[in-house]
Image (tube, rainbow, N blue to C red):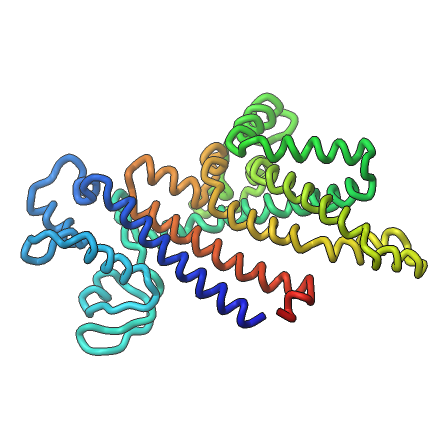
Length: 354
């Protein structure tokens, strides 16, 4: 099991390096970053200073090759780095550094600064992260709470109206895009029926009171969480039903019945546990995707999370924020996949043996 986790970690790091290469060469190819930072006004001296800060030119005013620009960016976003004293102080890097003028260090990744707000990208995304985490956890909680029992009931009541209804509902849920369902939910429950539901068309996870302090407003979480949870709910229902149908035909299930165990015990304790592996795969995969893919749902509902921050940054051509968002999303994918492998070992002892 430990070897598997180490192997997955190495693969994950290689994937992350690939993502860094992709986002750098993709977004650095759009226009002149110094012009985006400076705007349409500004003299040549200001532009030259900005280009130096962005590692586009060196101290002599010579253009730095794209490959060297990438190495500088990789050095910034990597936890293992080499920086001189001036860079450490200028960028306010946080970590452990050792050496002379050029120091070797282990630091918190530096995602550079926003073109528009001049704030550090890391602080912008960390501020938005709680909203995305709350939304993803709530959506997945709804999907698990409804999807697994619904799949079990559909399998146990195979070929009945309950089974047919569950299959039809899950097909509709899988087919409907989140942005389309978001528009429907906003219009129906946040506008037409708002007097009955008490829900609003849009709203963040916090509100600012008269004293300027933030306070939680979990009421605004309901509509985006339900919208985001519809597709994983449908998939979990389908996978649970299919896995349970396979498990219920196994010999050990018939043996459990022969021993006199109740139907509830056989289904929920013996059957469901052995059917959970494909469901766990769906849950972990979809949770990572919810963290990374809630962009349009957050934007439609005005929910302050990484997705809305990223869409706003794209509109303003604020590429460092977009690049940082992609890197954080990729990191979540890797971490959650590793946690999924550990969870397999807890649910199915056969995985631990490998």
